[in-house]
Length: 449
Image (cartoon, rainbow, N blue to C red; front, side, top):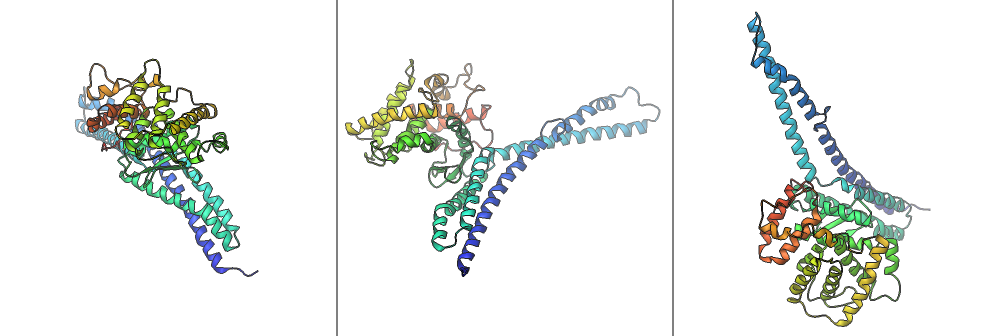
């Protein structure tokens, strides 16, 4: 059989590209590991730089005090004074070493917080490398042009696309063009991971919103939504991954269900986002995502239909205090000012499928019927929106147990009720995140858009 030299050359070029994918993403991960090693080296442990500097300072504390207040220098005062000066010089050097170690540690901590690939990226890198290996094996087995093109389209090109997205997003993260919001997204993804019982998703700034699991676990934050305010929408994108859960997917593709699978997935993703993070999602979706002009169709419900179902579900999560019901009423008023009423027929179909969706979330993902962010949790911070803009020193709102989901809900409820004070609300929440132990110190978003 004659060897097709052109096909062989084409395969060699693509295989070289797959090798680069594996090498480059592993190199990025190794850089992160080196940064972690640097932090450990500069740590306050007794056998590391900062710790050793501290031990030197302690050891020299006695001689330092003695030479500054000598009781008796002895007969050879000149030699004793020289010895005293050497000890003082050693003390000064030890102090400088300690100061430099602390400065280096602070810089390493700052780099870590803005580094393009946090530790949560291990899953994304591992997934991308694994898919590159699979594609490499399939491509090597191709002995015809048809097989080559088929594998390029189904396996190789998605790996290349994902790789370039990862590098592009990593570049945006490290230079800070996203204003640090990707780090907030990482924190939110850790919470969503726990709801879905998976790990290893990485947030990257991108041109459009999407979460893909086919190749690497990348969560794309679409421009211009590189903002703290857009973070709740990540929960919706993440909700589409719930549809890939084996038992959930089986329910979605059954015959006799309303509309298309895409329509059902949209309702499921909405419900997941609401139940995962609370009222921040429907408020953000109404303000920044849903289009009042979108009419009902087979691919996606109308904007009004989605709002109707989300607010009904939010009211269903409301407890005796009725806090969620009050938020739903306020948001319904805002939406009605911009949108037209939807047909009753669509709302009835949505109500029925919405109930099925909640049963799926409860039965297959074991999400509590009150949601992963129930009203009882909101009640702990219910007064924060008011106190953000009217701080009371006698009643501080910062304690050690607050997380990003609290912050998102507080910020969005405050914005819903005081839409003319968006900048002030954003600044107040930024200060809150700075002063909360779980909040990230460097790289906080600088703009409130």
